[in-house]
Amino acid sequence: MIKSSGELALMAESGRLLASVFELLDRTPLVGRSTLEINDMVERFIVHDLGARPASKGQYGYGFVLNASVNDVVCHGVPSQTSILKDGDIVNLDITLEKNGYIADSSKTYLIGKVNPAARRLVQTAYDAMWMGIQAVRPGARLGDIGWAIERHAKRNGYSVVREFCGHGIGKEMHEEPQILHFGKPGTGPILRRGMVFTIEPMLNRGRRNVKTEADGWTVSTKDGSLSAQFEHTVAVTDSGVSVLTLRRDETGRHAA
Image (cartoon, rainbow, N blue to C red; front, top):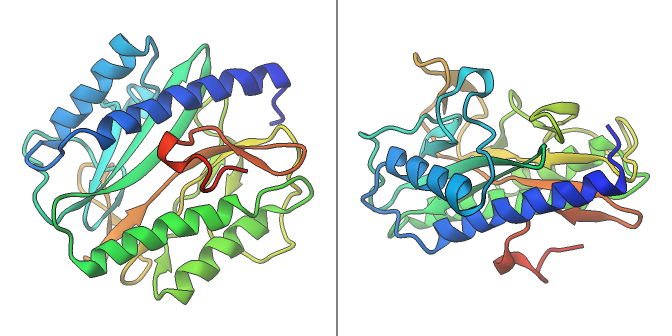
């Protein structure tokens, strides 16, 4: 779905506010906190400090404002008072925010305390893979170019890419067309056009790419128990390239196009 200049401005505002949520988390000690405590802190900040709405709460019957996916959890981890982040964990926090009717979506995998080098390398590669995908975005490129760039980087580093979940168009609705696969062949798929807005959110596993859904119906974990890491940004196709709508201040100048 192509967004007008006015819609893009509203989406950029939602993205800026969502980036500030992650900046709050960046300066918050997470070790020893429960994932439910983090969820509640984020909800207070979005609602009371930013005057916005946590778009995930109530979506598809989900009762929380974020997903907290720890270690071998790939995505959709449900916040819990008994899930306490401990030294050596990695946790992906996936958060959405709606302001003025438009939604932004982003996630970041946090290193909790002293994380072993193998886990740290996975997290860094997942972050770099997301940016490989983002840097493939420009008018006239194709969706397959994004997935190919991501998968190539992951495989070169010895990791697998989860295929059951993908990025998506976003705007007034959380999930719009098109679907953004994190694997593919260059030069294939629909052509990217100015005004398209979507998420790029690859999930990389240390082991095999296979996943399973836990008994709660939400939590998705690696089948082999290996670690998984993910990063996500909401991006817009511009006249000359890409604008990262959820870009954080610590990323400015490093990857912005």
